[in-house]
Amino acid sequence: MKKKSLLLIGFMSMALFVSAQTADSKVAIGLYGGKNEYVGDLGNGILDFNQTGYWFGGASLSAYLSRSFDIGIQGNYGDYGYLITAGPRNNFWGRKFEGTLFGHYKLNNGYLFNENSKLSPFLELGVGMAGYKVGTKQSPRINADGYDFLVPVGGGLKYQFNRTIALQYKFIYNFTNQDKRDNIIARNNNDAFVEHSLGIIFSFGGAKDTDGDGVPDKIDKCPDTPKGVQVDALGCPIDTDGDGVPDYLDKCPDTPKGAAVDANGCPLDTDGDGVPDYLDKCPDTPKGVTVDASGCPFDADGDGVPDYLDQCPNTPAGVAVDAKGCPLDSDGDGVPDNLDKCPDTPKGVAVDANGCPLDRDGDGVPDYLDKCPDVPGTVANKGCPEVKAEAKKIFAQALKGVQFESGKDIITKASYPILNKVVNVLKENKEYNLAINGHTDNKGDKAKNMVLSQKRAEAVKKYLESKGIDPQRLTAQGFGETMPVADNSTAAGRAQNRRVEFKVNF
Image (tube, rainbow, N blue to C red):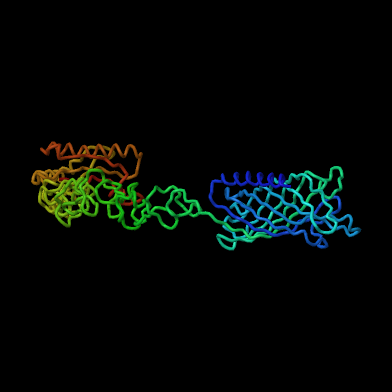
């Protein structure tokens, strides 16, 4: 018996050594009470409530391996047997003591159930040995020789009241390698037994704190904090200004809330102008540009265009400027709007120093509108002088008085007096230039009418030239029947359309 006890003690000591090699220092001691139930050649006592007694007590020592696994050892001692109602001589009863090394797979591992759940289901698998002792009750039939090798399989449920105390129920089916404890040996039918146990689990041992900051690893959000660094309740380095850079690394520990910072905890200065982004109203200033306290480039003349872009840095205050900082010149005449007295001059028109269109003859009609820019005229006549009433009268007489031989461009002698009057008008008014326009009615071929009207206009031009009028002052053009002034369907209308018109140009 002493040999058996020493062997069991040695086995349990080995199991205890194994559990001491866990990565965590957290351990638990359990105290159990429960019932052994026989399964063998005499019958099956699982949940057989007629089988009273067979109680046992036990203790366990377990260690935390990971959130999924625990390892431990357990020792039990108590009654073991089975009551045969057919005859007391077949009953057997004894004492059983056992030691097992077990592993738990915890279902509250974060994959199946919440790791912090108070209710913790688990599965158990282990190995162990059991020894037996003859009891003192009636019919103590039991074979107590040797040891059984055990493979306990089962599971349980633990309820954690607090960090230290838990209540645990466990159901274990123990497979054995023997079939002799009930003194009945049947081939291929080893004895087995079931354990129901209820116990109290006491957890102890300090929580692991890898970085030694006083916050257990289980709740430490920053488990690698350097030694000596002050941390918050979650084990993370203190960050007073909340910029994401802990105080022990922060070179600017008083950064205002919300300001973006660099790796040193200092406010970002994206454009490198010396004004941090959270204060910089112009965060994209080019490198090297001088800025004011707001981080914006200097603008000496206050025109809204910074000096480094301003091509006209001395613009008077209040003057509207373009993108280059130069005074606006809306009409593009080279005179800025603030000096331009004629700000709506059309593009390309030559202007004076005041931005107004040039008027060479000073007649109030600008050169670009003046049909006679070198001769003073009237606005009504587009800058040209008014044709004298006497001249107009002569030209009107000529309209009807210039006659040609029928179908020809030969001027009749009867037309000379009126043409001579036209010559006198041109000689008296050197500024007059004369356009001679020939017209026909619609009788006859159009092309021939066009040629005829051209020849008649040229005939008049030659006559005037023969009287001493400079050819440069005269033009002749025929329009044929294209510009009637009366109805060609009547003789009177056709007569009006056959004409030579004189138009004064300057």
